Image (cartoon, rainbow, N blue to C red; front, side, top):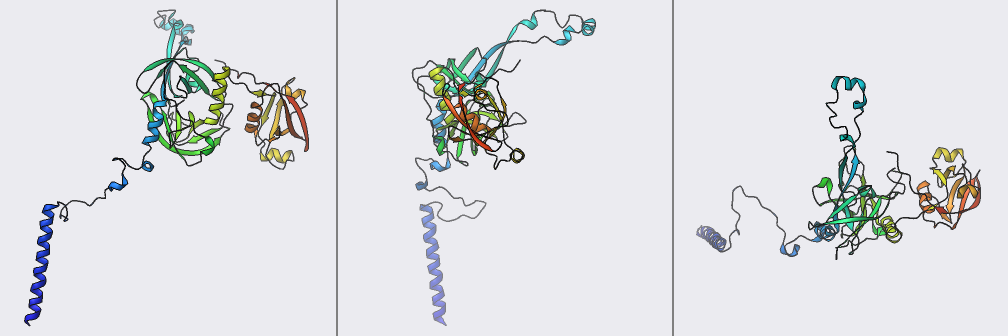
Length: 394
């Protein structure tokens, strides 16, 4: 009977010694033993998971934003407009009861008023060329560019292209941080993008989203459309700002949003760098953009139209109208014809046809393959310069 009690006493003694040792170690190394109470156990990042105290690049886009932000500027424009005379002042009944008390200065309505606007821009060259939207600088008689460091510069318009909503400005500065252009071919739906601009005039802002779609068209925003769609927040004032990829390279210029409230609803559009680069080069070199034109009006081929014309598919573009005396008219093209190829390049829809013809140099002969009453034929049209887009009546 004495051996079991002796064994028990030895075990208790060993346990007491172990606890005493742990308590001693806890004094030397605080926090070694858990303390009962209201505390919680948290997980911390190990030293091997950080780089100089910062998280790994995959968990932040600070490097991409830091690379692109110095190249994005704020644009402030102003112009003088004349106020419209209140039509009530010409109403004899109104004047009979109120007289001229609301028109003490007969020339007040004729005085010009200065209207301001704001937007964003992207520095594309160290010697001062800046990209923005045409609608940001349209009709402006004074343009100021505010750099991220707060310095303000006067800018002049090198040229604009209303049909793509692209404008090129020039400022005088010895050395500017130019953005790096990305290759659009590498952009995919689902890629992370950052929108950088000056929304509502609050100052430079970076928002994040993904590429929601590519090649958006038929939106009625501009004549030539091939937009990047993104859910990165784009608001008034972001127009002309940069859309960059996760490496900070420019993939597009923000230009429009779909909104019923005026704010971001998660559908924004940017002009891809492929179009921006082409338009920018022509503006800088020639002061404007020259496009081909053959004098036709086209429409989409719906399944119903394809069935009525006996077409096998909806590919191609239906000729809805031909300008009398224009290149297409002289080439023998008639309304009702279906254009299916331009210089051997297939026509998918009316937008692709517009782009194919616009890319043709004026003065060259274009081979137009078409269907007439289900019979394939070819016409040769001499390309002319596309007329300037008519401005809407005020």
